[in-house]
Length: 287
Image 1 (tube, rainbow, N blue to C red):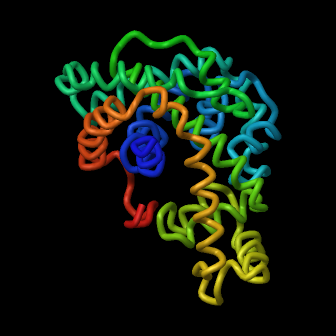
Image 2: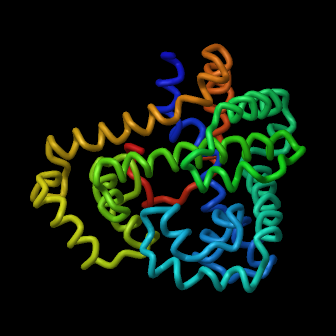
């Protein structure tokens, strides 16, 4: 289906913004620290992993993929001694509610457009498959919220984690570990800036440079750290495989409804970005 393939490729710019903004929203850290967690990275690791239960740091590192496992181990499993996964999940939805209200405004959240988008996005999630997708499966077990804007956020979260699990499978298939995947992705100019990636994912300059050298030896990076033709081909193959593994929700929704959902979510994402949802000097302008 043509529209399914197009939407999977545009997911980051149209839908993912409405989910990922919560990782940068001050409301998230406030709500999760009120629940008992320590400020900083712990709120991210525990908040996103909580739907899988009180899992080990190895499980978090494996499912998140491009974070330094040493960084994860500084916060997990300690987080589970400070707040239960159920309490963390509850606090996360409280944070989402507050962040979306600030960025989009209550009038927008109460609009017919958001209600329609929520209904369509939830319908799309019926096309997700849990097989081989542990992070998605954990989120899929959660109860649905009642408010339309939270339904929309939860549905997009399911779609995001479903796609993300498929992306990790594609990275494994094409021989990129977490750090190599991160280094090569920053080289595309479509994601994190290199310094932001190193800092947020917990990699040292030495580790980053060693991974880059290994990619050069494979002919995937050039001397300046850019992708070679082979590197570009590899990243394109990975994106194609990710997209191919992510069409189920859009095939389930159908072309007309998929196009409508895209039309509804685009303005919401743009409004959130214009309201300052993301900090400067983190993402490439080609994102």
